Length: 141
Length: 387
Image (tube, rainbow over all chains, first blue to last red):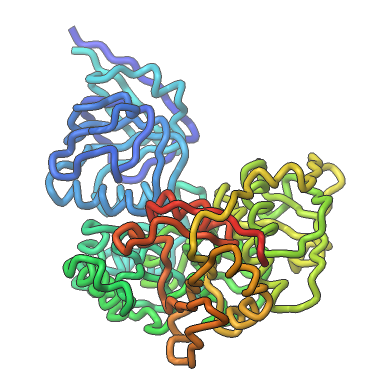
């Protein structure tokens, strides 16, 4: 049985390409301090995703905290083969955009916290760019 | 986003890998922020210079960019580095930390950053022309640029300012557009501004309560030009500490203030009692000045203004003053009364691990230092109402 639910977000912006992968939701995230950069495991309790791996996940982040250094850490995670497939968030933070470009992964911005709420951890999701909109689909197999 | 032929060629890698990466980052940020085009910038200022700040990840990124051919394409300055490079402090730090800090500076100079520029007041290295577009990181310099100098810059990050330096352009969005530089609230300060410490605590408070670009109606009751500028610098850098504001319009100070209509804006009145909660008692025998940096001339002025006998009675034994690197070769007076004066050329204690250097607390008159010393340097900080 194959079923999918999609939502089209008119104002969302994408950096990178269409992609799909398993969702990992985070309440808050700083690449400096919340992730073990040698293993890619989340170490902070208040992210709401402690002990999860970020590798190959689509990170749905409600809020980023931290500074410029975050982009450097994201870049070194990518170089170590621990990159997430994509980062989906609300506020377009230039530091995170820079990290996404350096990693050559996908970033989606202007996705509200309410939409992120509707996706569950481990849901398989697909991100597609359609004209000026972004379509996010949750796939049930 | 509109890109010209050369931009397209850069994105295709025809001008090398460093330029391709730099332009990709600038274009990506611009597209997400809705920019229609790129604009040339004349000066880039880079942050994230301290090894304690950017760590091994930042160092290896800079190394890679250099290997990929990164070269500053426009005049570029950089923020101060950590105090591990200071002859009096070097002994406290592990040699690999000192080596890595040295390496960061070396790489930046090879990329083409002005070698004597390491400071958070880039406008003292090269005075920008009114109306110029620049790409500056360092929040205190950004807010000073937009609010006092009448130049245009977004609040860039260490990475985006370096990328702007490499391609000589930035995205046309945010603060580069006049339409986005309108006041969104009207703040009336009921107390005259006479000291740096009051400017600092007021700035921290304004940053905290601001919900958009503030129009600040305040009287600066100081005649001397140097003192006035130091007061404004501390006010603005403190605002940019507790907010992400790139601009604050100050009545009779900001070049365009007289053209701004504030009649329909939300009004907030601030009295001294609202902000004094930030004042604490003396916590250290060391006083830190120069956040943002002071030039030697400004430092001299402050040392002549502070009542040194008084602060000696308060237990201050040493004054640390952070100054631009280019002022390094000037003559330093190392002692005033019984107080030792230590200059930190091109450095910033706030972005240094102070505990390692046996500095457990610092008194200051600057809001930004007060706020960040505990967070970044791991030491205690307090505000002294002395100048």
